[in-house]
Image 1 (tube, one colour):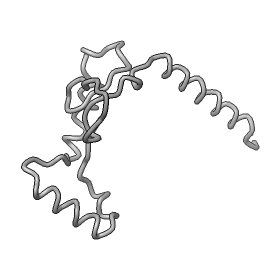
Image 2 (spheres, one colour):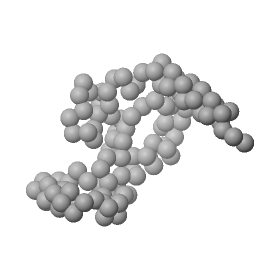
Image 3 (tube, one colour):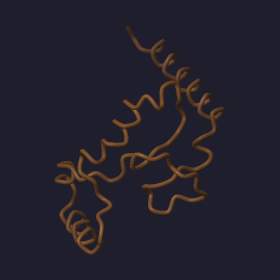
Length: 109
């Protein structure tokens, strides 16, 4: 989970939304928004660390394994238990594969 990342994409926000976000960020002691480098840190860490060779199905935020929570309050930290269900993940993979194959077979070509 990279978190909220402050990039040039925000230039496409409506002015009042952008202004409100800047006001909200200024009122906080610490910003919940990250630089692109901070946002990439967790993905780079997990993708390159030998600690995770042959390990999958885990969630990380801020370079730490995410805590399993009953409810995600801030939208940025924690993972719900159902997201760690390997059986559900396999069913989703199989269904996705089936739908892609069906679409490819149905495409004119």
